[in-house]
Length: 313
Image (cartoon, rainbow, N blue to C red; front, top):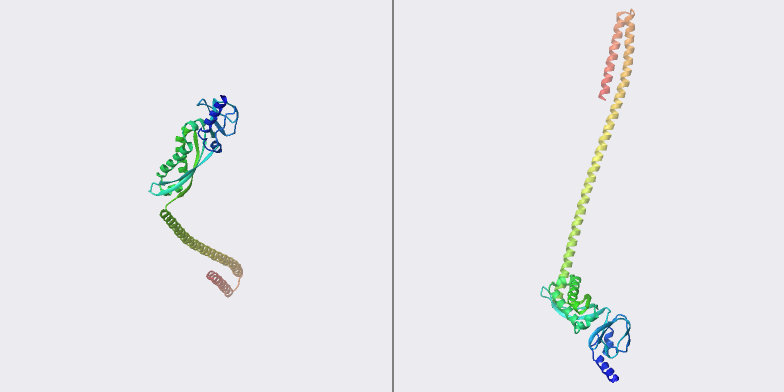
């Protein structure tokens, strides 16, 4: 009798739903683990056990003991990070451009109980949710923003998936867009736009180069004129200083000559005056005194002429 019951329990275990995702999926294809009383659960796996058809507990990694016949393993969940390829789909952007886009989804089971009993097919549910969310998010953006804002688009899809998958015990870690295919005509127009933008940039850079060159030439001419004027000014200042020094030296020389001449003439006049004084004190004839007076007058006249000549020179 016990043998028949064990065989019946084994048949039910083979007909149990497949375990979802990861390496355990291949093992589940040949049947879930059997209740052998003593079980060893691998690391990063969660085995959901039912007792008499109702949820009993979740087996932790390591050694576990079950009751034969009453307990059976219903689901095997992988707690590793799972990668799901999102199939290619069409989406229409805000400016009515149809795109073919696909992606890859990274998620992890956070609650094995919810992942087992919260949704019938978690993989299909998450894939459909990612596709619908992607279409709705692309409809809010124009074609140019789709290429520029891929990171924000991925973040929006992840937030939308996490809001819905929280009841399934699944957390979406990240979503990445793999390929974006645009229609051929749109692609040609985009290439033409890129070429036009490049020609525009080249023209702007060329005009800026011409402007900078003209500014540099004008600045060079300005600096050259300033330097030339400063040089001319310095030359004039130096020339004026030289002329002033020459005039001053000439004046000093004339003053020294006048001083020397005046000293000589003074000495000569004093000699003549002394001679006149001697002649006036002695009793010389009148003719001699007249001659001395004439000599003194000639000396004074010669002194005046010499002073005049020095002034003119």
